[in-house]
Image 1: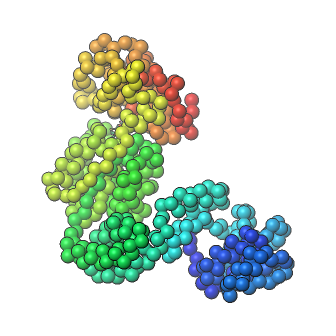
Image 2 (image 1 turned 45 degrees about the vertical axis):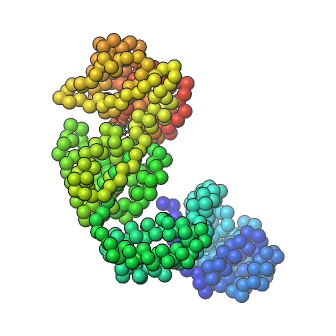
Length: 467
Ligand code: SAH
């Protein structure tokens, strides 16, 4: 992190602005909103600044050139002149007096930078690009503006008004948090945003009474598909639940970037499994989820791809059903879909394949029992999960059962991530090819004539492996 973000109280604190042009005017206005006592020093004063001073008693204009002696005990200083020498002098003097200084549009002279803000006071969201690109920060602000309705600040005031009532009536804290989340993003908030503030408040009062009566301390489990790797492929619901969860239980396929999106103070429990060592671990995971939910926690069980595709999601919720624990399942983009798309390989295509089969290539006792006769039928695509170890056997068996040795096959490593690699071969040379490559898990195999489209349709250029 290049900068430490903070919000500073400037009410009745002395601040200095050097410069009195249009840009200075914007800074002065912002400081005035925060209640600062502002001294403006500049030899020439723009009408914008004069008008501000006319309207705000706490703005004091001194019309003169800046001198180092003007710096004196201020809480912070902003230099907004177009004179490089003046800006430098302000920065240097402020720094030697240990006063935070910002020189507009000149990060190298700044000891603090001013973020782009969305003001829904008392709620303020601030965005910074760390001085690298103010335009980028402003674009992000525009996006956030559309997400945070103008009445958000008043909603915060309403929440504050009822904070202690909720605290008295609703226990334990986890229950309280769920209550507030439901209020602040549910029908009461919608009512409030649509202008029916009195009605919203009445409903809030009713909800407090209702929840106090029926308070139940049991938690919930959200079985969430995290997609194949690229965090951008999460669903909105996955993200929302991750941000509400008290605990995140995750395994090997969930990337660090995705985990980072979970609520910051959520407990994170790794339950990654080793290949060939499933059964016991799976039972303890099922029990862990049930135990956490019974302790009143909201648990996100985060799984790679889709929880219901080779994810053992079914087994995990069976235990929850047996123990009468509330749960939801959130689908995710499965590896077949994510990898095929990012490799430019359509899984079906009118000229190549009318069906697509997902199979597991996981070896049981060293062999793979699949319906080979069905898998070699032409005009279909076969997607193999967990197939790297059995790749040789798979290719051999398909050829034995009559598939053409020329049938194209793709191996996709770490699909949709910046380390994605796509290796293309045929049934008779793929195992050999792969042996010479340093392959990193996870990998997915796609077999079928659609693989031939990769060359012309590939579009995704990961940073690390452009080949
Ligand atoms: N539930 C997951 C699959 C879990 S099985 C899903 O729907 O995607 C684990 C296998 O998925 C891995 O062995 C690999 O074959 C495949 N896989 C998952 N993510 C992948 C990725 N990003 N790239 C390539 N293969 C992946």
